[in-house]
Length: 199
Image 1 (tube, rainbow, N blue to C red):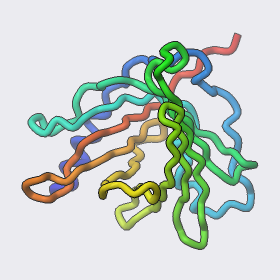
Image 2 (image 1 turned 45 degrees about the vertical axis):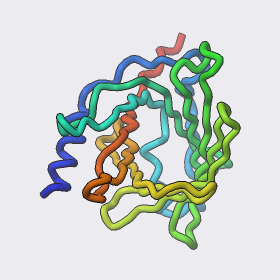
Image 3 (image 1 turned 90 degrees about the horizontal axis):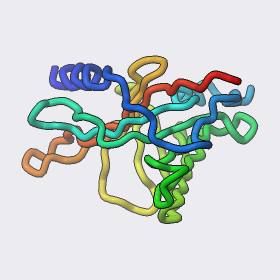
Image 4 (image 1 turned 180 degrees about the vertical axis):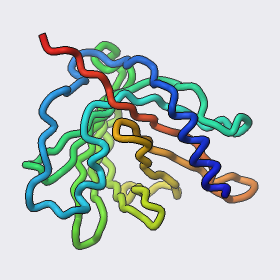
């Protein structure tokens, strides 16, 4: 019951539209996103929800209100099939990217390891030249869970959740210092972006 209530709160909070995009030129693909290679297994579709252009509102959990708060800022997250359809590549553009020099851009290259039954991802980020190794897998609850392999970090609780065909989120939780339970912390609230009309 507690889990169902949390899901309903998430759905209600993320139903509100995301604020206008705040990145500059060159951050919208709005074009050919590619296609999966014919040799890819059925599980390769697990990240299909990420294909396209998305406006992302970053929200913190408001424990007092029991809901996700107003967006702290907006960013852009784009996904497409790369490496001849054998990988899902997604790009993250910080707020102000394209006109604010300190704004960075990151890229994930996601490859599905069929033998291991999980995704192996390399993350690169321009602001600090950071490279991370991440893994993801679908667990019993049906969500894609993410954890960091390198460099080592404190235990985290992160999963992706699809709310509709054009709306998904990356939900991060932290441990409550008093109870030790995982509690909501941050939501990357992604809604499909409108592409400008062709001239």
